[in-house]
Length: 262
Image 1 (cartoon, helix red, strand yellow):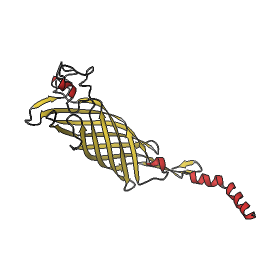
Image 2 (cartoon, one colour; image 1 turned 180 degrees about the vertical axis):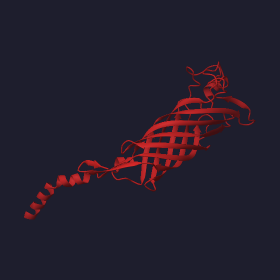
Image 3 (cartoon, one colour; image 1 turned 30 degrees about the horizontal axis):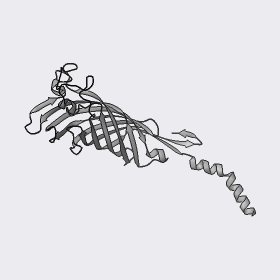
Image 4 (tube, one colour; image 1 turned 90 degrees about the vertical axis):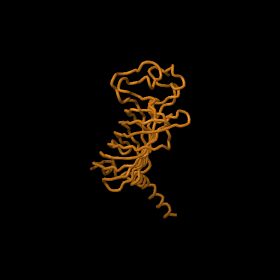
């Protein structure tokens, strides 16, 4: 009985110490500056788009950590998108484009694990701009049908189907807002190199990317909304990519009784 009583006293007196040891975090790790060249495939979700019609996508990402769980990235992407529809529109499109996007990312792995992991999962949501020029041809005889810009007006009468083109003269690329959303997986190979895979969707804030809208095509005398091409669902494109991340700098600190040291 006396032994049991002494054991209880020992456990109670050391409970705070044991709890503190379990909760004590020895290291803090903040991503520094990194650069990631990447290559992948993309497919357009639009009237002439097909999710299984893949196109090469090239990009480069600059990333900076601001805390253990949050990073900020600037990414530049570009390439040529193509698509075809032989059931309703009997048309094909080709769009050369490039986009710049800014997004914060949340490290999901560090939400649940205090120690650094070789495999980490991140999710992101941001904002960006896309510049594109799209031409549409008949899919059977390759006759030119319409374009997003002919160098004369920003919005051409060939695309609007009705009215006078709207915009400044001499604009070749149409610039539009987009919302990138997705997730990435980082696998650390060395202290300086990681493999990165990315799955994301780019939501374009209009229905112009494939230069085709069912609203204008079915009713060529009406333009949906003020200075708008249509009232239909907006276009977007899906992206899957892989890259090699080079870590230029990083920050690791060690906690000593609640204080951090480099």
